[in-house]
Length: 238
Image (cartoon, rainbow, N blue to C red; front, top):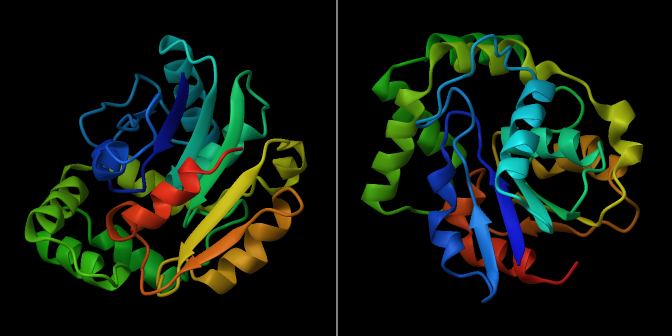
């Protein structure tokens, strides 16, 4: 059975993929764990929240699930983790789908915005403001409430570590080792990591001929905003 192993965004949780799961082809499954420090997943003792530590955790999760054949799906922060893992050429990996990923090089975040994000931790009004800023298509009220709740239950250690370290990591030198087919999707109105940033920082480091799709009228949260476009990208054969 082909499995989609889907990694969520920073300050999110695995259930962002719930609506997509039910639309995938018969005979496939989608697994979307909460990553350490997010959702319901506590960080292991001594976990340092680096991109490689997250990649180690995902690799161990995949082994525990006894995955024979799978596609990695990475959204935002999860995209950078997926890139790091794919560069290790793990057994059974068949493809990589990147949804508005954090680029292999440092994210284009200014010092002022980084400081504001650090100061926003645990504040409901800031979580609601962030949601409004990074989405373009309207979402149902219950979905908005879920996104805000996920933001607020992120641990401060995971929150700070990504802003101060993970988003700044540069794994560009490893990208030549990614040998599986890739697909890259980004929202046309993505205010977090723009299509132009993806064209400069991500696409040139992926295998030649990687399809690059800009989703009209969508922001950063593609698994919520652009379920059908995500479904099409995952359902195409690798």
